[in-house]
Length: 409
Image (cartoon, rainbow, N blue to C red; front, top):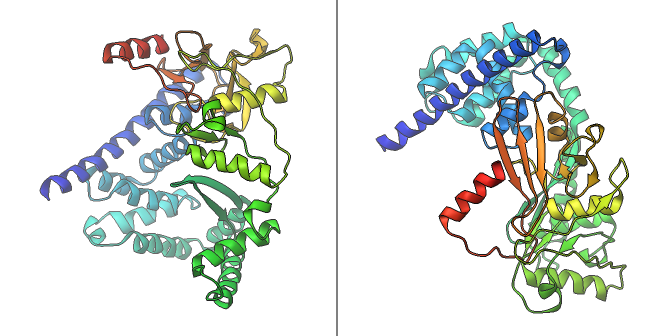
């Protein structure tokens, strides 16, 4: 028990130390760019993406980490001290930073003092209770700022999906308070009146009602969808058990992939078969070229199949943009070898001074490799994932280490 408690305190202390180093990095970068004559508005751009790479996290997480560090170092010294001492976990410190972000530095500092100046008051306090207390103090100090924040938050409403275990998808909707409660209450009322009429549970009736009301189709088999399912010929036409890959979702079992294809054919829907060719030894997909400035639709589809998600290391965001590793303005060609599928934030980050992206196209020795070098000179290699159904030949630890060094070279 003592070891577990001590290790938790060490984790918190490390988080505080990371905040200190992130701010030191920002100071050095801004100072260097100021000396180089970089306009103030452009100083420090891309820094969040660098922090994300150092912390092995996604680009969006990098922005949160950098904002967290700025708050602790500039306006919330008591929170930083509590984190450094281990009295406050990183998540609980994040709650304090997140729920005061809309306040002035003075009000933010006041909440920091009231809650964290005496860390003994934090003992035994639940996360929800801490969150509620911070919100209460924020409204007490500046009610108009809270009202304005709620109005602004409504502009961020959105719907998103995330893969879930066992061939399921987690559909999420971020909605204004009244809208969200109304949707849930309507589904619940429908389930309350329906459950018992068949073998479905209350939760299943709510889920089915959501699908029907959004799509207008009573069953999922009747939905008009475009699903890019990538699988080997042995999975499609044989009895291979290798996993397939669904764009925007991830791997699915071979039996599920065959069932998806069979269902589409049985429903007499429009189905298209695209053939992708790979190098048998490495799984490198065959390249495609174009002389166009913009990536044509076919090449975008190829990059989506090859990269599967944003090619920046540790980022699992869906591909939103297709861009040149070597810029088109620097004679970079519009090809599969020089093309990368990327999320919006990372595609913007790599446009900043000091970022260099080089690629090595798939050959008999390796699959497509992109090496991202940040302004600090750190290199991060990204190797294209293996196509569904491909298995790399077994290699020794020495061979794997040599390959990693070659990828980063």
